[in-house]
View: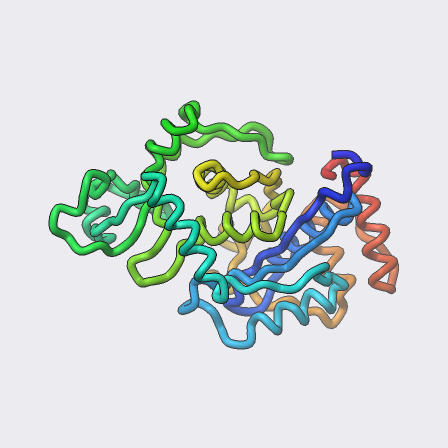
Length: 299
């Protein structure tokens, strides 16, 4: 996209308020910010607090304070997924009316009993309830992936282009199965919420960590099923913990030390392959890094 198209560019950073930002989340925030700003576009912040049991009270305010300390400010109102149940229900109702979603009575144990699963890999749903509940009470709602593929005459495996990683493929029906839209615990699934919210906010580009790349095909299928626009996607390098896995709160990631915001920002920029900047003023640092990002060919 050229700078002349900049009025169309809207990016976003969508953290889950489960604790303070750490080094990995600052990389994602900075990349999404620079990618939008390098094209003269807007940058929005959204709190993905749909999984309420995991959220920590006050984390949303802390995250916004951390972003502000780094000179990263949302160009619009910060929206909260926990306040958007009606929008998610409307999307589910639309899918049901089109015959693209169905109720499921299976427990996780039921699903896992049908197959062997590897560590960090969820069991593939075998479609047990696709033809009916057979007397079981409905626990969740799922997208009928094959019905979407058939409706839109999609090739299998599904393919898309990532702006950093290049061509990507995933056979969603075989590798994921009919994924959950509304959970058995009464909460909305991430996949549905993120697709509805990206469309509602007019997001044109999604810049996020590479750990989320395997969500992309599911989200594109949902966008097709709901007749919503598809953003461009770019997945950034990850910050790794000492054990080689993605740095996260689950494996002991420490909250960002923002006693020197420029040092934290330079560390994040280094992960993105950008040079360190010596400017003390945040505005000057951001301007110089935005230019470096634009010249790097990412934008």
